[in-house]
Length: 327
Image (tube, rainbow, N blue to C red; front, side, top):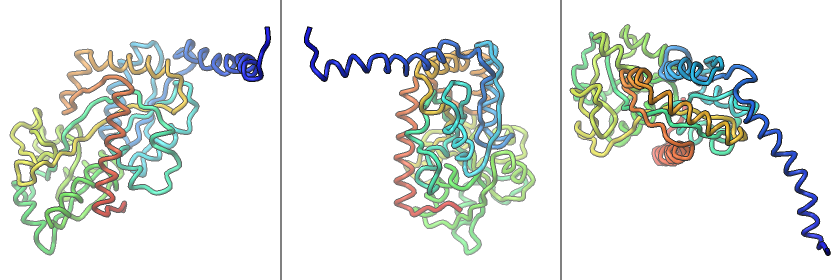
């Protein structure tokens, strides 16, 4: 039999291909028996990212028979923790739990040490939720119209967010620029610190997910004024939307997702996706997420990728068109 050079090269390449595939296959087959799995919550303890990670960790651990450790690694709107996961070994033992800032950071933070599209693999979109603008119980702001009136004065209106570049930050900047309102941003390092000051009245307004704000609304320590989605939140049915308040078409939901290092074996990503979907379908976890205002999404890794990349595209345009800068 005669072999041309191209055929010979292809045959010689087969053992190399098999050698490269074998370690990944072995890793996938052994997963998750080797060691505990780390869920890196990319914001500090007390915020919604931390809470989502912990809501998933316990039932997921019981389901797959392996310990799951939640590690908080906050800073730079979640990009520090995400960078650590992007650089981690792609062996299925390190995942990131990210917030909507993940869709904003590529356009807002220069020289990030990772590529959000290339260095991370979406595992699952956990869910979405409206953001809510709220004020402390003793505030002079009784309605969103009061906030608008204040934002039209020389003094303006100050508001706190979970950090510079957060979706709340961009939403308020976009709102202010389009309507000629003076909103002054006060960034915090996560939802926990923001809520501590908001409840105490140290910051006049706070914007965050329903997940973050609802416990304080339920306890009557915070007064919700408006939600940022085009439809009212089932968890806050009496709170009007921005669309209803004179800003037609405004829609900016919060969201949470789980990511892995880019070269994690597809078999592991598929298995992790299936296990998290199963956890979120369980009545207990579904109820706990719903109580916190999260609409469970789930679905495939590909569906998560499409959603996340669309968020990156949408907010990149908002940042560019409105010349929004990180503090």
